[in-house]
Picture 1 (cartoon, one colour):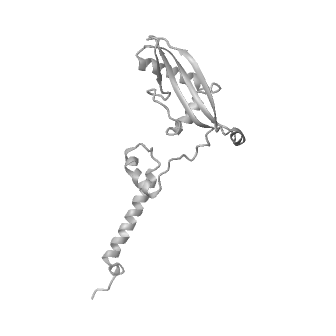
Picture 2 (cartoon, rainbow, N blue to C red; picture 1 turned 120 degrees about the horizontal axis):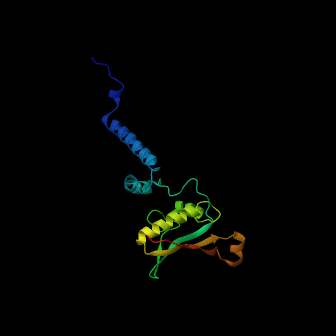
Picture 3 (cartoon, rainbow, N blue to C red; picture 1 turned 90 degrees about the horizontal axis):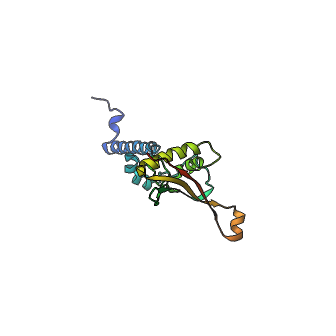
Length: 180
């Protein structure tokens, strides 16, 4: 007669439940691990509903500081040789538009790039000029970087008059372009 083993005492339904629990744990751990990849990757777009359902989706960055601005609109105003003016975005490559809240990583980058006290401005303006000329097929004569920043005021000042932000508008340029 065969001696019963410890594994034969576990009934099939119990074994199935244990397998399901372990499988779910592995799946859940994998979704958390994959969350470190960029949000726009296909796997993260597929897993987004699951993360929303379980509350494990994170839309913040550990190393972000408290912003000094509520809104920071930056655009590139391009003056064409024909006299027309068009607006383009400040994000390279491709002169893509910039939106403060949905593109928070660009908030810090663009603030550094457009700060006249930083060494990056000259290189950024040169590359921006090349992109403007390329995009306009040589029809651009000049461009300027326009920044409308809504700075968050001190709490004491907000209490005094109810205004939460202070608008500061600044334009860098115009920067002249040499045609092709």
